Length: 184
Image 1 (cartoon, helix red, strand yellow):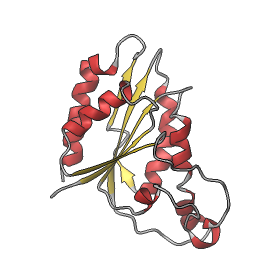
Image 2 (cartoon, rainbow, N blue to C red; image 1 turned 60 degrees about the vertical axis):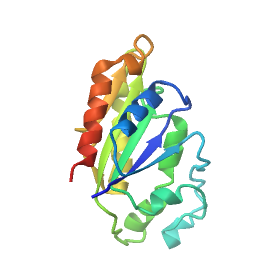
Image 3 (spheres, helix red, strand yellow; image 1 turned 90 degrees about the vertical axis):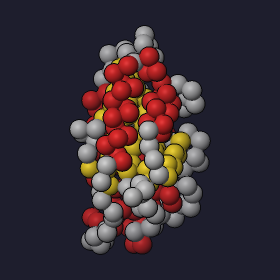
Image 4 (cartoon, rainbow, N blue to C red; image 1 turned 180 degrees about the vertical axis):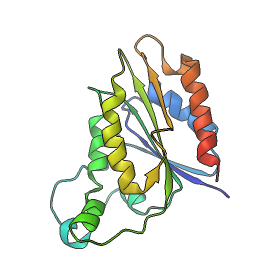
């Protein structure tokens, strides 16, 4: 069965550490792969217009529709760690899950989302401090009905001294991550 994978890339650098691990992941994936860049996709953050409080749908029409369509088997968040969490533009993308939150908690309309596999790829310089990113990842993946990221997160730390593409363990683990995503 061909699987469809959504990669949300939170890095501003097209040829940086996160990009190197995403390229390694994509090299081992089969099926359709859709990559959305938080910096280049033109997905606006939530503006709290509150339309979703009554309709459970977002008033903004942009590339976030790809996520709302819920037409994928795997979702991967890839991001550098800035100030101990995900990048601002990626958090802005995540804020757009408000319609699904409104559907479940304000309107009491259960969503019938596909079950998905969740994974994360993080890159961090210095001491890493990527632990706080887990909170945001958990909330986002929960909204998507995606599971598994806690056991399937690759982190290349100390990228300020060893670039991710030279981190043999991170490259190996990224290839293994792709293999897990392709399993039924």
